[in-house]
Length: 86
Image 1: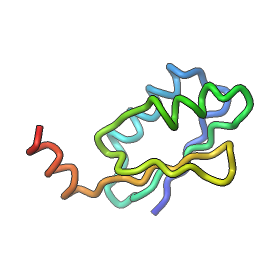
Image 2: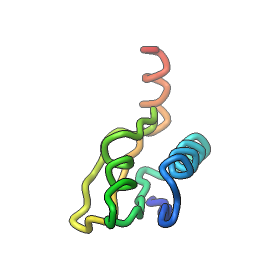
Image 3: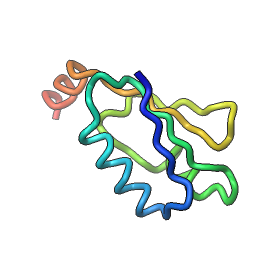
Image 4: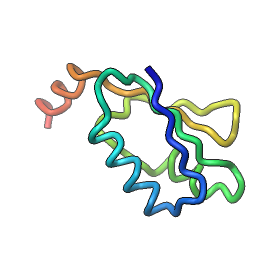
């Protein structure tokens, strides 16, 4: 399943808190997060694509739509393996 989050009108700090809280609490039923960040100014786009890190992100997918980015998420087993490796 895909979860969609819209970061329009947010600052980088607000976006960081929103994404962290979302990925910390999102059900493992979701395997993808579609992030709508817009493309004017590029600040949020660059943050989402290049700077933000989280243990649940398996892969970052750059959309053909420049205002969107997708995060493919690790499943529960992959997270447990990640924790074991420390």
